[in-house]
Image (cartoon, rainbow, N blue to C red; front, top):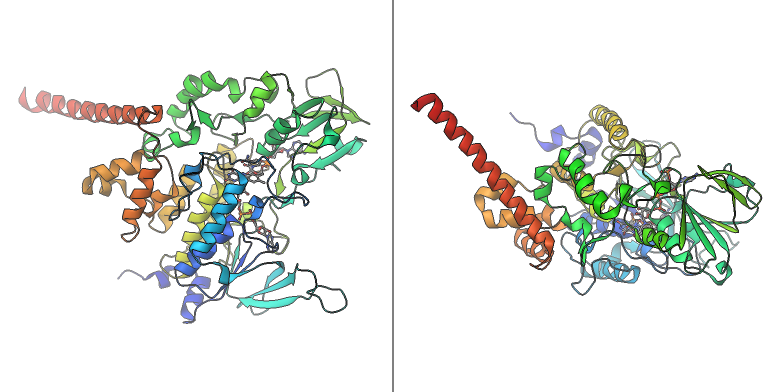
Length: 555
Ligand SMILES: Cc1cc2nc3c(=O)[nH]c(=O)nc-3n(C[C@H](O)[C@H](O)[C@H](O)COP(=O)(O)OP(=O)(O)OC[C@H]3O[C@@H](n4cnc5c(N)ncnc54)[C@H](O)[C@@H]3O)c2cc1C
Ligand SMILES: NC(=O)c1ccc[n+]([C@@H]2O[C@H](COP(=O)([O-])OP(=O)(O)OC[C@H]3O[C@@H](n4cnc5c(N)ncnc54)[C@H](OP(=O)(O)O)[C@@H]3O)[C@@H](O)[C@H]2O)c1
């Protein structure tokens, strides 16, 4: 007899389910992923839930704060196209361009919270100071501190409050704690001004005429350098390990990431080991965008295409072509304000260094030994105690963090409601160890600083498969070939992972149809060419079998 989910699932989850009462849920963080988690927990009936947000607004990094460090820059636009930003059941407005700016993203998030009536569950200006298991291990003790002025014990100390929960969902973001580099060698030898991109908002008057060195190869580095170079006297972008660049768009107004469809994935265009990716690199990517995506020797990546993060803020390459930005490799030595770069004999005099060196993944309110990037099963569940989970933890090389976060939240809630089983601690640890080995192999250059880097299409299919949301393409082909074609040839979007739900199916298909680019766009031609390729392949296989049959049985 087959065991039920409750019998098969992890003992900690089975214990929760056996309690017979609704578990109390705590969500930390009211950014994009916190809102997704909240919506899905409420929708699936786990509505004894509180979301604590430390600031006075929902939206996380998309709240532009001109006077405070953190969050987006004044000029930030998404690098992922809108197709990757829709909520699975709440598309971004059609009036938005392909790459929304931060105001539009924040408005979308506010509309989302209003539409799903999330505000009653949200407590703003409450910082989660500490979260630990109670001594008996039965619950999570969460200590919050009000961030609002005046909420104190009368002696000026913030009044702490204790709350008890059964489930802890961490959505406090991967881009909250800057990786500070200025005390590391050789930057500790620098006598000029230094700042982190976390505190950068826009180019300032003080930068006028100065020599500014931006350190880092991520999208913060290229966005900052591309803006600063319009004001500074000289702007240098130093990328110590190089990076792959890929433009946001291909041709007229076609977001490059929209080329990735389920169909492409079936043919292997978006896989790590695929020979098609290898061919694509040499015939399309490097023909269009130059060797390494930039053509500049100083910024050449140290890994193969698709084996590391791809920087989509490629405007910087145009700025280099215009002579507005100087490309350099790593920083070797610094004496005062004089900086020596790798492979360059002549030093440069620098006034300001902006470190765009990324963020730390530690969550200060959790026990220091916990690190979701290396210890969470599929970047979601703590294998030792899966009443702790994380949402918004995967960093796709192309794609979007919240789209993957929504799938993580949907999986988590299915586990906590006993609809799908979670493996045992041992099974999760074994898988985690195997995943780490694979990660090192597929992302050799980024493994050290981005253990949470994933292939968006592979990871989304995998997470969706754990709770039955991955489209069953074979069944769709026989059930409705037209809808099958829609699902496989539309650009990737979160809507695809709703088609297996009978109630959401029609709306999902309608939303998928809306993600298509107009007919005359070359991506549609590309889609049709791939279909022709499939037919050619099928006809060839059928032909070979017919010939074999004639040869073996009729001759
Ligand atoms: C400049 C910039 C541009 C970006 N562009 C893109 C893009 O184009 N595409 C993309 O996919 N991603 C982009 N990102 C990444 C971005 O982090 C994600 O898009 C997404 O916003 C992450 O949402 P989140 O909810 O996980 O985290 P966040 O947006 O960081 O939200 C976390 C929230 O948790 C709160 N919080 C943290 N700690 C506590 C605590 N202890 N107690 C209470 N509340 C707490 C914070 O105040 C914050 O509101 C960008 C990031 C930056 C910095
Ligand atoms: N427009 C946009 O949409 C936009 C803009 C900004 C940011 N973002 C997003 O925000 C997130 C954070 O991006 P990010 O660029 O801030 O961080 P990031 O992607 O983590 O990149 C950090 C960079 O800093 C380098 N670095 C780290 N330590 C260094 C050191 N000591 N010396 C020299 N270089 C060092 C790393 O190089 P190594 O590989 O050598 O370690 C890496 O290139 C990402 O998700 C990104 O997509 C998006």
